[in-house]
Amino acid sequence: MQRISILGATGSIGESTLDVIARHPERYQVHALSANSKVEKLAALCERFRPAVAVVGSADAAARLSTLLRERRLPTEVAWGEEALCQISSGNETDVVMAAIVGAAGLAPTLAAAHAGKKVLLANKEALVMSGQLFMDAVAASGATLLPIDSEHNAVFQCLPVGYQRVPQGHGIAKIMLTASGGPFLQRDVATLETVTPEEAVAHPKWVMGRKISVDSATMMNKGLEVIEAHWLFGASADQIEVVIHPQSVIHSMVSYIDGSVLAQLGNPDMRTPIAHALAWPERIASGVAPLDLAEIAQLRFERPDLGRFPCLKLAYDALRTGGSAATILNAANEVAVDAFLDRRIGFRTIDRLIATVMERLPAGPVTDIGSLLEQDELARETTRALIRTMPTIRSTSS
Ligand code: NAD
Ligand code: MG
Image 1 (cartoon, rainbow, N blue to C red):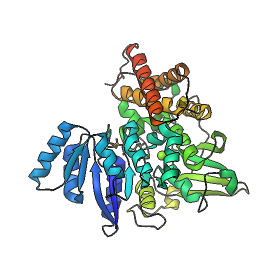
Image 2: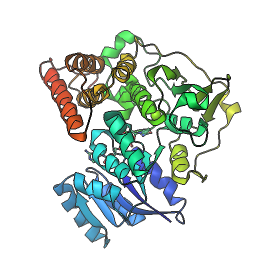
Image 3: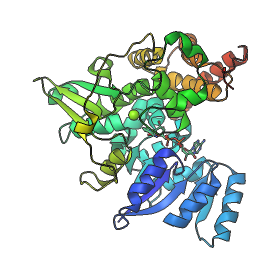
């Protein structure tokens, strides 16, 4: 029986994880669940999965959750804040950690799980993008098992040779090819992107996801973050990672070998497949995902990404090539900008302009420890917020 803590249990990935776990009660026991503020939803999950601990984001949320759990006569212990998150991700009572908090808020507990040598199922790509080398060093030092949940990276992982050692050349690998759906604005007239609304941006054609990653998919910053994620997970350079647009999202990514072979992983676009794969690895378990019907899909299309339409993808490649804290700065500026866009304080195209400006203004420095990392992260956030304050409020047209 494996004991699992789910960071971000009320989110899209959290929900899919619990769906898979519920299908295999003989294999997995939920030790802890976390949520930021959705206490009603978390209380219902506690009733269903009976974790020993539930962690929320504030004292107020903890008080409300405690009341709900008392009403349900549940013995779940309630805690709140970052230290409590680190405790459930690194304590002796857990074997597996699903890191599915969105954004930088997930860094500390995900890193704690890596330091503690857990089996870390990584959905929270921002944590790895921010901390890069520090994160991989923690995994290497503790002997943690790091398994990618991002569908592309999970697909690459499945197409790599067993025992892969993070050196593509050492295994005859020429390229890692990440597929991208292109998001909701692949066909849209670029001139009209200035005025798209948050509702239009989060309406992803293929995947149902949280709001932040949905906006990232619309700008293709999501793919940019994934290029950086692939660099750290697989030891590939920027030149060894290629992005190809594939609107059907059936091929989740590919590995191209020097003999001309290209291995791909296919499946319906449903996150329960990578989640089940990582949970059971190296075994296989049922996930509840419908079998792929290729004849029904009939056609798979591919095209090169247009960097004029998707400048965020170029900014991410630039950050990866620059190295040091450039990716930390990119990620921080993006989180602040996306938040402002979802709040209707800035327009859609302002997201990429803000990130480019912040990256120009802040030189990338070395990331030697968590202190210097958080300093540069905070400076980039403050710089982005200050830029937003100086801009006229841009409201989306249909709100
Ligand atoms: P979501 O918005 O649906 O859920 C986010 C979860 O994080 C929630 O449980 C929320 O309570 C928690 N959370 C948010 N802010 C927090 C804070 N400040 N402190 C503590 N907890 C907080 O997001 P999601 O779509 O499930 O994505 C989660 C992560 O997985 C992201 O990093 C995303 O990039 C990655 N990911 C998601 C998908 C997907 O299909 N949804 C695919 C690949 C990768
Ligand atoms: Mg992905």
